Amino acid sequence: MSNSLNLISFFHASNMKEASHKPVVIPTLHKVEKTPCVMDIVDRLEQCQSELGEGFQSTLLSSSGGSRHHFQIVSDKQADTIDSPATVCPGMGELTSDELADQIVSQWKPGAYNLVHVRGHGHAHEDVMGMPTNDFVKGLKKAKERLGQPIPTLLMESCLMSNLEVLNGMAGSVQTVIASEEVLKADALPHREMFGSVLSNSSDPKEVAQNMVEVASKEGKADTLVALDVDRIPEVKRNVDDLKSCLGADHRKPLAKEARRVMKESKRFPRYQFETHYRRKLDLRDLGEVAGSLQSAGLDQTVAAKAEKILDSVAGATLAMTRGEGYESASGLSVRSSSIAESSGWNFFGLFS
Image (cartoon, rainbow, N blue to C red; front, side, top):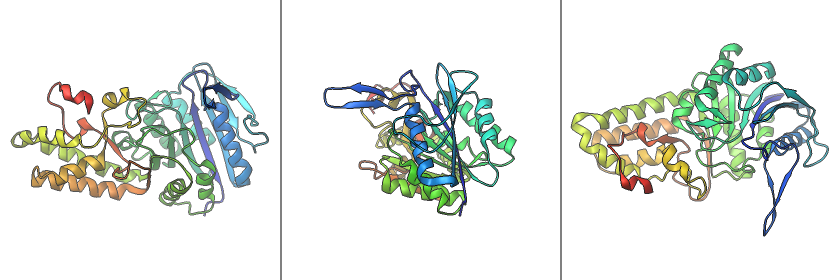
């Protein structure tokens, strides 16, 4: 059992409303909406502090185009208000990989369960928290090297970040990741219940991540959320590369076109009606759905066997998962279509898939 949880949180605001330290109220025809902002996440962490007690410790570094602030989280005294003392930090805009590593290392507490939590817009392999995703992954690696140990658990409260190519880059730097392959709304995760589960259960990273997702399945509203053993992700990536190599072989090239057709049975992410311009740009499909379709399509025994290996390795890397209505067939892990089979030229019909 973990005696204390040390939460190292990050929040990146993409615009002035999100960077606000007070509620931004937007009246509409039917209701009043509040834009999720710095205050929103700080207040949530303050509520966790109030309810979880001394065993819970948290800091938050907020970044935006105009400023950065470091918050030492205290117990919540007033809702919709920042009670935690803030220090203005040098710099502005998104973090660099070195700054990300600096914050993780400076806030690390030996003896506690250290959990890194990021909140900000994410777009799989392109960007997260305003940073190019490659820089974010480099920051995690630098933190691991300076700490001399991997980060036990990374909670990615960002859209579309449960992605094979991204998570494969974290291998060796992070032990377990909790993330969503779909859009993740601001109120989707039950923070208090998830963080409380760390204090009341084992401190083994796999069990921590599993318990957090199981709690989110009961108390949260995420369409997809998965806990993954990052050490097992490279095996998944090798199996995907093996399938791609197989489909690219000269004697199987006629199968590649059919394989791409079969792959389209898995709809692209994001599947929400907004942000549709990202579907073709990011080219993300559910890996389990794609491999399952290829396995059952009767294309080729070798292709089917390699697809089955992918499914087995995804299952082996998955610690826990929750799926909402309409996502019952999702594996929780997305993949770029080009990672499985390269497109052969421009395709008019691909615009609508």
